[in-house]
Amino acid sequence: MAATTTRFDLKDRSVLITGANRGLGAALCKTILQYSPKIIHAGYRTALGDFEDPCISWRQLDIQDAASVAATVASIKELDVLVNNAGILIPTTTDLAQEMSNLEAMMDMHLLSPLKLIDALLPTLRASSQPMVVNMISMAAFASVPGCEGYCTSKAALHAATQGLRLKHPEIQCIGVYPGPTATDMTAGSIAPLADAMDSAVTIVTGMRDGKTAIFPDEAALAVESLVGAGVATLEQQFTNLLSD
Ligand SMILES: NC(=O)c1ccc[n+]([C@@H]2O[C@H](COP(=O)([O-])OP(=O)(O)OC[C@H]3O[C@@H](n4cnc5c(N)ncnc54)[C@H](OP(=O)(O)O)[C@@H]3O)[C@@H](O)[C@H]2O)c1
Image 1 (spheres, helix red, strand yellow):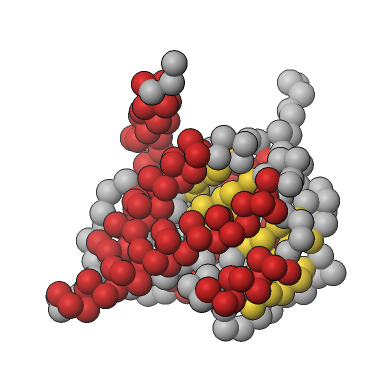
Image 2 (tube, protein in one colour):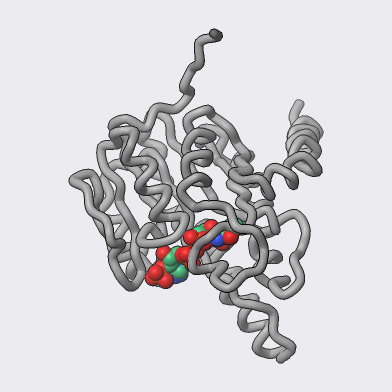
């Protein structure tokens, strides 16, 4: 059997996960724990997660609150991996003013707040031997889903921003994760087939360790990858080549 190589070892790494108290964030936390990290700074906004480990340091972190972000950034002295996981899904409404306000909230949540957090943590990340940023996007970044058009718009923006981060910070491994519908509070009541959050977390962490830049962690996401994955990667490379000497 061919030898497998791990391009990124999570052992002894310092990791920050936003929205780690439940859903995919909690599943990622529990999965990364299997790889002996030094510490996981587990962000929670309102309530702690219902799990504990000596490697987990719970941190109150509301990514939309500048003071909360500043306090977290000031207290983290070492960081190898930032996982921008926190998210909200506000369904589409016919009230135009409300729809615009919801879009602003989701653009702030999925685009501006993660970018501000990355900027604030850049000096700490750059001190790592192998810095990594993981952005939890969505397969819905590639085509809008009826009933959550604003959410899809904000995730498409985060997808573009993740490509931009790879160009601006080539020294950082910037990964986009594109899950399909997954069984968490976010999809409660959904009639779509749902992936298991722990299964998806295992696939995401495997992708991080394998050095991937785009991770499609479940069956629905893999179907999207087969339609657009290679095309997007090719375009990204072509655009990069276009402007380099
Ligand atoms: N579930 C899916 O089908 C699916 C599919 C594709 C992509 N995703 C993406 O995957 C990520 C995780 O989703 P999920 O399904 O696990 O959602 P979830 O179960 O609803 O959990 C959302 C998490 O985000 C946190 N959060 C919300 N606003 C925050 C803020 N301002 N600051 C810090 N944390 C905040 C929540 O904290 P509180 O407990 O305090 O509210 C919670 O921990 C999201 O980015 C989501 O868009 C999910």
